[in-house]
Image (cartoon, rainbow, N blue to C red; front, top):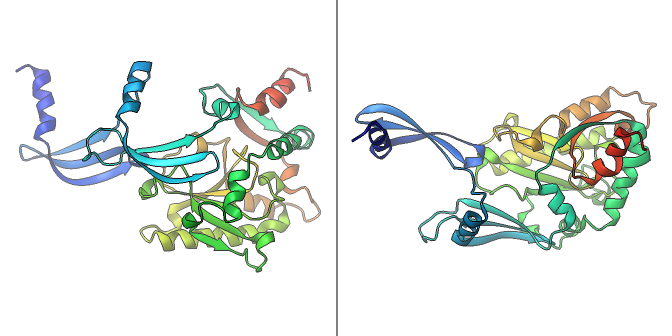
Length: 318
């Protein structure tokens, strides 16, 4: 037997003792055990998905035991297995957008990222009208379905009036984010949606919103650790996206252990506590709030905001 074969047989000789760690949303695990009575560590990570058309077709054909987790408007999410055997556990989380639009295709396509700085002038003159246009296109229907009680009500884990009993003004609710598998706490990802429709993004926040934001922060933390008692408050992170995927104010609640991808990177995620602190330092006389500061963030160069606003600005055509 050659050296390579000798090394390969070690895997079959591994005897499991216990799980040491699970990360990347459960896609990588580290096990401790023994080989021939000597201690050994084994790290297992799922290989990359196939990329050739033939292998992708074969992979799709192998998906089995599809279980729907929910649906809202054009969005659907599932758990499934990657093997044909009925004994294969659910090891896939599927998100389906159907029917999808050209905007969805642009968003999920590989593209070069660009750092931009949005000044208050650019925001007022170009970005806010861009936001209004996107809202007018009906892209918030799935959110309104939730807020108005038409879909996903069984998934809502918190409803709060906002502290003053006026649901229409300061109320909010929380439910699992569609990208979470709803079982792996290391990758916990919840989403809080506000009922009010006058705040589209962090740009609309002002000093007067601080008590409301603080109330939401405490209620979101309390509800999360009550539902998932294995977690404590200091194991949770609350943040907002800018630019957000959709222009209705919402807050992400995630496990601090969730490995930060591009959605939690500098230039995309803004910590809720940091935003509150920034608002606290603002002069009472300044009514602009977050609309009056410059924000730097990244955009994909296939995004409409890049092609319609920041590329022309770069080329001196605005």
